[in-house]
Every structure is written in structure tokens, then in C-alpha cells.
Length: 133
Image (cartoon, rainbow, N blue to C red; front, side):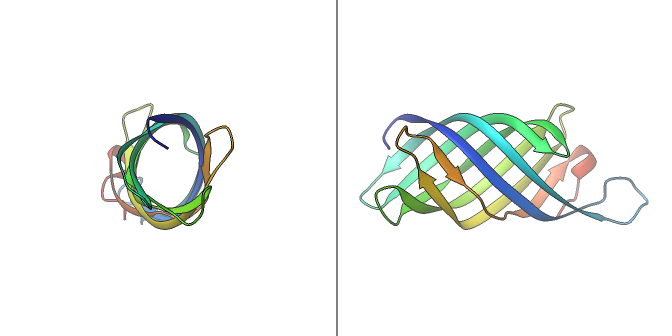
């Protein structure tokens, strides 16, 4: 997994509590996204890979977004592992959501593409997602 690989990811982000419109009370929004982009490894050893990935995709129901994630992939076999890291989703209007995820299952396909599905904890945001937790 040295160098760059194609990466497709699915991550269900649940439990987003954001004050989208003041003075309305905070709302809980679940959203999912499908993205395609690239990832690169920055440090590789026998069981872990430090990675950065960028992608563009659709965040349902929030619209098109750019995604950046940084973390560590820990191998559990030759084509599976878990990922732990942080993510930022930036939408077309500049608003963003930041989050973190821990030990999300990850699988690597024969073509070098990766896939993961899990939960992230929202840690903040900007614009309409300001003070999201």
C-alpha cells in the first residue's frame, strides 16, 4: 500500500447535532456519503499505514462535498483492517463538518480500491455547522 491508490469509501455519520438555524434548538442529522479520490501513505511499517486521503462525492442529503481524512490503517489480514482518524467534509458553500472515527472496519479490493463503513463522532464545524458536536 505504498504510494497512491484509488479509494472509494462509504461512511455513515450518525449523531450529528448542530444548531443549523439560530435560535432553533440543535437538530440531529444522519448522513452518508459516497466518494472517489486518492490516498497516499506517509509512513508504512509491518502492521500499520499512516494515510491521507482526499475525495469528492455526494453527502446525502447535504449535497456535493470535498472530503479530507487523515489517520492510521491497522492491518488485520492482507486485505482487511481498521482505520482510526479524523475527517473534514467541506460543502460547496464553504461550510464544513469535522469528525473523528475509531477502529472502523476497512477492506482493500484487488484493484487497490478501499471500502469502509462506520460511525464518526462530530467534533465541530463552520458556517451552518458552527458549534456542531
